Length: 152
Image 1 (cartoon, rainbow, N blue to C red):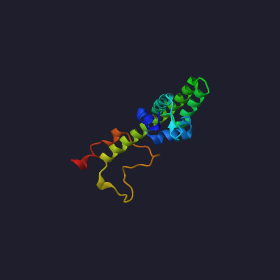
Image 2: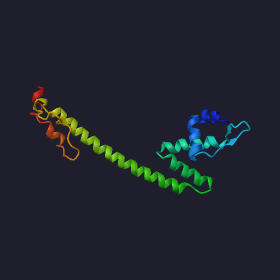
Image 3: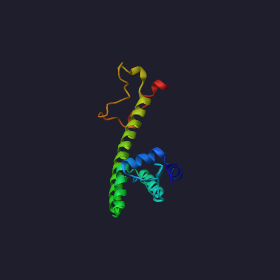
């Protein structure tokens, strides 16, 4: 198969396929007498594996390491399990950070609704944007009737 056929069969661009060859994710293909790349039937399967592995969050370097192990005839199950466990732990850390950020933004949004703009005395800084290290009041404290007096 030529590179265009592989691209159509897999949905990868020809540029991506050439890049994968360059970084070692795909082995260098055989060349026809005219210099065109000629790919074997396993190339489609390999690129489908690359797509599936990328969907899990694995980097191309990690994917290349899995394929290298497989190409050398080694089992990759333990290596893949280690990589996936590490990515899962990193994802959990990012989710925790995003949840903390969301909670902080929700408190700031509640503060923004509760603040009377007429009471803002700082010409440089909006009083609803708090420094990251400054504790924010609980949302319930921000919704006192006095804070909303300017809205009624």
